[in-house]
Length: 314
Ligand code: SF4
Ligand code: SF4
Image (cartoon, rainbow, N blue to C red; front, side, top):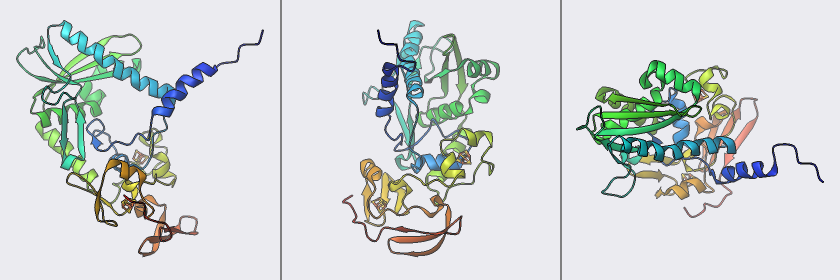
């Protein structure tokens, strides 16, 4: 009898590969309320400009899915207490959605609830999150505002843009299934500050300052954009990284072709793509129509030359 193959087995590899095959580029059309609490504005700008495609492992993608699957159970748990929980907006039949800045900023609520035992007459924004044991212990010790400021920021935006004054944060520990339930109040001043931050990121022509110039800084070490930000790696080619594209009310505009760009066109880009100079690790020494020449950090010259390419129909 043939020996069993050493782990990982082909089946395990195939399961993870199926997740990786479905992950796409990870780019979101809008700047998400779920990430506006990030401490580095430059990372948010890179997110919004589609600089770094996702390359998550199958194991991690499955972990993200676990978080999504948990949401249904949390809804059932809340309903079992007698609460009324709406996961979708009855007017649209889709998730409750908020947006601002011409549609460039927004997010979708996990749901809203009425009849919670703590405050039966008050509508609450619902936010569900799963945590590792370490993260969950910190949450219990400090509360969501101090332990998970990104989650707190997300709820402040949702409350502010829906007009709901309370949020219920329901967290589950993935190791023990223990639950943590916490209410937070709307803080309009904080929400306004977050909205201003989103606007600054969305309409910035240049990347905001780094949170640290040290590539080994702890937030940088875990940042998806580390290579583009600190190592001089190139950005992905799409309309968001092109110097001709600008976010305007309701969408993206291309100055080169004088037209609006739908998301699939933004992903495809065209032959006239020229990188935003801040995304090239060099200094601009010359520029003309459809060409920008750089002196690179090592002294060499590089031309971002789009003169010989055909502009694909956008
Ligand atoms: S690597 Fe650091 S400075 Fe650069 S975007 Fe990420 S967190 Fe910000
Ligand atoms: S359509 Fe072409 S020129 Fe216009 S923004 Fe996109 S890549 Fe740039």
